[in-house]
Image 1 (spheres, one colour):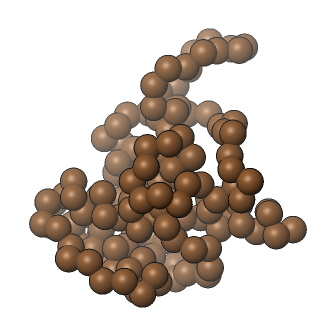
Image 2 (image 1 turned 90 degrees about the horizontal axis):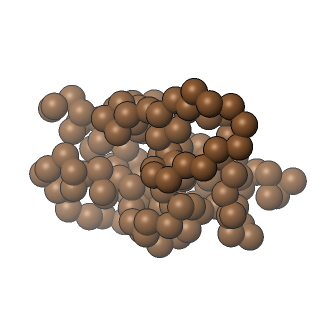
Length: 133
């Protein structure tokens, strides 16, 4: 558990430094995850260190494992009700905002924020590059 908390602290530290903000880092795992998500929700796309991406990916993979991955056996058009970020699929179609950068409201539970939070800051950076092209 301590390694996980230290890993989240690394992500939070990098993101706070990027945004030029300081917050008290909570003690519990759940609250640290919330702070990490809130900072990801307002992250402005720009180049970041490999260390940040690796630490972020470690935590997001742990969260994915804890939520569980849903593999669909059927083929064709399917209706899914539930957490879309749990699906093992090649793509998710989302009615994104005009920026394609997700919602900018920290911890807002809109589908845009949920997808961007589960995917990591790389999704926002990639969408930013696509929109600039």
